[in-house]
Amino acid sequence: MANKITVVGAGHVGMITAQKCVEKELAREVVLIDVVEGRPQGIALDLNQAAAVEGYSSRVVGTSDPAATADSELVIVTAGKPRTPGMSRSDLLAVNGKIVESVARYVRERSPEAIVIVVTNPLDPMTALMKAKLGFPARRVLGMAGVLDGARFSWFLAEAAGAGVADVDAMVLGAHGDSMVPMPRCSTIHGVPVGEVLDKAKVAAIAERTKNGGAEIVNLLKSGSAFFAPASSSVAMAKAILRDEKRLLATTCLLNGEFGIEGVYVGVPAILGRNGAERIVEVPLDTEARIAMQKTVGAVQKDVAALRDLGLM
Image 1 (cartoon, rainbow, N blue to C red):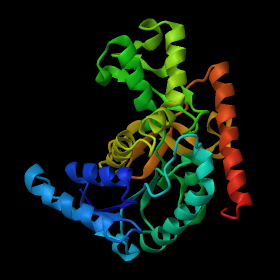
Image 2: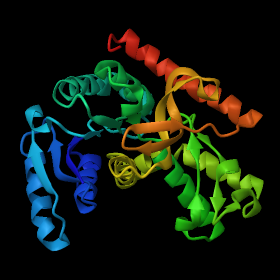
Image 3: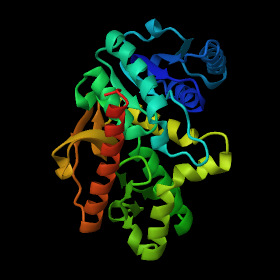
């Protein structure tokens, strides 16, 4: 068990992330920080009282003071404005970029050895911005995307096949956005390739729905974005790191030649362990997937360039 982890942002994603962290007892102390005074403190008190029922020993500290985050071993950044109907993830660049910049400042000063998982959208450029502002090794600055996108792909495949979702292992690469790259070739249902269970047209339709999985939820909710699955996905990554599980998970990592891509944060398979992203695993790409990866990299580069134009990088 780690000594301390911090969850930045006490909105829906942050609140549920903190809950899952304590229920899994990932750390003795889980700090939940938010700029809205009273909200993190109230959530912390509620979660601490729930411990008497659930039986976990982890303690939650709610705060608006960055000093309370000092010496965190892992930081999960969920703070930021959520999408509303009709808004793209890229529309959030300016407002969320300033939030990431402010968080990076106190993480760098107070938790210089931390591993950081970024959940804030638009996720890939926000992870690049966090890395630029922290100056940490790239293996310690990661983004949560592929776990969530893969979970959505898995659910849609299971639903279509009439299979248990626990038996589905689906992979999605690329940016966490409309240009993501679902990988049916690397996806199975109880070890059987999805192409042998569902016809090609059905798999293609499911892949397209996966690309718009977040927007589908935004349009249904009308006043926010997804929070249960993003929280679960970020905690799965945190657990793999803190418990040194060496899990192969799709993770937003800085590429330095892998997949023929240089100097860009984008979702790829990586082994997660106590040192962060310990190894990027290159899977073979057919021509279609390779073209799609170049497209998704271009989308990330465009957003990073916009951050530079805004003076944030």
